[in-house]
Image (spheres, rainbow, N blue to C red):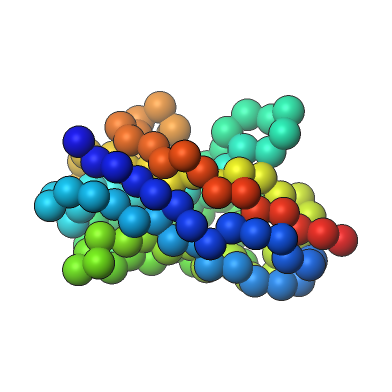
Length: 124
């Protein structure tokens, strides 16, 4: 069992930056693929970024590519999402997720554990 706790959300002006963190419990964090997803009001949950267990494999949604960076620190059981050049359309609840395989994935249904989410609001 893995428990995930997100932090770092908040209110920021367009063009600003935020760094989200996701702290994971458990001794096997290093063997999990991690992902970030987001859900805006009235919309379905969508993929943002994913990172493999070593941190060398990553993938991003086209909408965030070049602006967001996913990273992980296995010694701290933490995954990060650095968000730069934020836009109002990035406003959403951001969720951290863990997958019990070594393969990265952009499919929400392939993740086994989810955090409670952290709100990110970008004002224009």
